Amino acid sequence: MATLPSAIPDEVQLAKPLNWLPRAIRQPDNVVQALAVTWLTTFPLSIVLALLIGLVAPDVPQPQFNMSGALAIFLLAVFAPVVETLIMGAALLVLLRLFSPTVAILVSALGWGIAHSLQAPTWGLVIWWPFLVLSTLFVAWRQRSLGAAFLMPMVAHGLHNLPTAILVANGINV
Figure: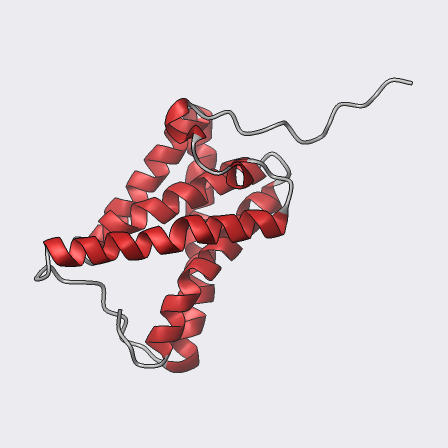
């Protein structure tokens, strides 16, 4: 009896510069593990980057979130991840037609870093990292389906933003 080929490719083929990212981010086979590893890969390092930038450039304006309560949680942990993932995914679908997955992911992360720097100059230095990981997650889960490609980074982005959203909701601007 012949075996059927797997519907899911082994792994997103990335050039060596991105192959060091955890396999759970690059392999679309375990939703919970992918989300947990994505959060553990993005959030702590983003905090470290933000602290380092704050030490090196303490007088540079930081992003301001003029909101509180449930609205802050909705806007930061639901609305922004949904809208930004839709934009990121659409851009990645175009980039993947023009470039290799690695180049598409790098261009996406760079673009998000630049876009966030328009609001606060140093924010882009922090935000490029999560978007590198979220873009990788999109490309990996695109192997499963277009819906999974959008949903996984959307949820991961919401989880990434949730701790900050909770702080902002309680009047602590970060």
